[in-house]
Amino acid sequence: MPTALESGFDWRAKWRDRLTSARAAVKHIRPGDDIYLSAGSAVPSALLDAMVAPGAVPGDHLIYHLLTLGDAPYAQDGLATQFRHNALFIGPNVRSAVTAGRADYTPVFLSEIPTLIRRGRLSIEVAVLTCTPPDQEGFLNFGTHVDLAPAVCDVVRTILVEINPQMPRVPSPYRLHVDRAAAMVECSRPLPELRHGKDKPEAQDIARHIAGLVPDGATLQLGIGGIPDGVLRYLRDRNDLGVHSEMFSDGVMELVKRGVITCRRKSLHPGKIIASFVLGSRAVYDWLDGNPLVELHPVDYTNDPVVIAQNDNMVAINTCLQIDLTGQVCSDSLGERFYSGIGGQVDFIRGAARSKGGKPIIALPSTAANGVISRIVPRLDDGAGVVTTRGDVHWVVTEHGAVNLHGLNVRERAMSLISIAHPKFRSWLLAEAKARKLVYLDQAEPPPEALRYPEELISHAKAADGTPLIIRPVKPTDESLLRELFYRLSSETIYNRFFNLRRVMPHAQLQRYCNVDHDQDVVLVATVTQNDVESIVGTASYHLDPTTGFAEIGLLIDDAWQARGVSELLRDRMIEIARRRRLKGLVAVALSSNLSLQKLIEQAEPRVETTPQGETIEMRLLLDPDGTD
Image 1 (cartoon, helix red, strand yellow):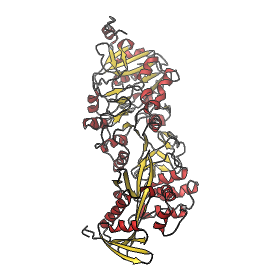
Image 2: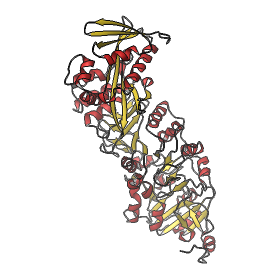
Image 3: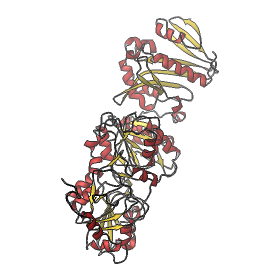
Image 4: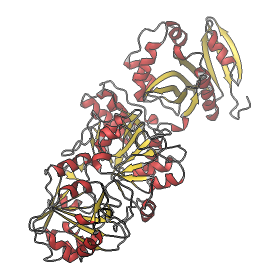
């Protein structure tokens, strides 16, 4: 197809003919016309000012929009007879109007809105957009916001364009020719900026936990808010990350400059950051201008779960307002009060779930209202809407840890979520879970001293064959994993550890192993993760006798992992912790026939005193807290 220039079409004549004032441009709006406003940093502020001027438009107009920045004059109470607006995503500037009933809210997946527009389910007659000045062929670039613009421009009768030279020209296959615009207004104004304040300590901890789930080569989706953007500050040691997201902000630019985001390992659109819109500072807008690394697409492409799933190792990071103990996620309302919107959360949760190696993540602070309210609740507040269902949720992260709910039963979900709730609410949540029959009625409550999980004891290691291991303190949620470990053990391994042929490991017994006061005693587990499934392959514990300063140590290793270096790693880690806590020593008791344990202890770094005791042998590892045993 020939270009506009090759066909001899003189677009400049159309350009000159259709350039006009904002007040004249809005005269194209007819009585009862429904209007779409471009969103975010592409809000057409000059045309908006003209629209809300007295007598400028006929009236009875419904305005559709996504998240908009800056003022929203059409939402003022005094203009109710002129405009009513329908928020497809609620921002702070229109929230009070929705709450007061002066405006509507449409809960809808972002990926589905273009189809609703094209089918006429959302009937729009006028588009009011911000674009760049035309290029040499007369095409306008949608700038920072492609999102719904192609679908809207396909169906509306009238397009009014605010030409802003401060809008960056962002690479995109989608553009608008001046011939399609009924009127254009030149107006040079700074773009609205979205800035996040200083991260709160809990947000930093949440970001740190999420960063631990992001491998090298992952492709990221970042929802709106300080937490998703804050995660990027904890990814500076990663390699070859990519981005496929509905939106991004300054944090992506910073990681590109550091060489962390390269998009080289993306399985879809390698070498390209794919998004639908950008919100951020002037710095990121300047960085976008003509940047060949970035490519913007409409939301029915970027947010299509089938497209998203084509990105291997897709990590989708979204936030929510509340989650109940079964995993139902509320993201758009505070009780009956609509607060934000569905946006692209479900699109990316489902797309990442279908991605090879993907991780869908929901993040939230554990409390609200300055710590007065728990965001993890027995049941969602009355009127709260479920955005992400309990069947869709996978990873949930708070400042107190990360849990994977996918595939867990209701009891395991409740215990997992309680484990990452704020410690002061855990007793209440467990009592409520029992009252609702979500957990065992005899479920033990961890001792108060165990409410703080000792993250400082977590370490990373490798087995003798190079398999990555995590050695960490046991959690109350490890009951199922410990049960699985026990029933994988051989009779010989069980006898050597418990001095009897124990055949079963019931719930009541497992609870005693899982609920530990780590300030007094220590129980470590060595875990491996394959296909996002964690397994315990070994345990080590010590129980302190405060009267002697010695602690009795015990080790248990999965038969399939014996002679692979796991026992040595656990032994050395226990010695390190005991030394740090200034214990006098560790005591191991082994059957006389258990030569492997005797050898393991005798090869330890500290001095060992051995005392035969009939069918057993007591081995005392004498520790010097300064490490000079």
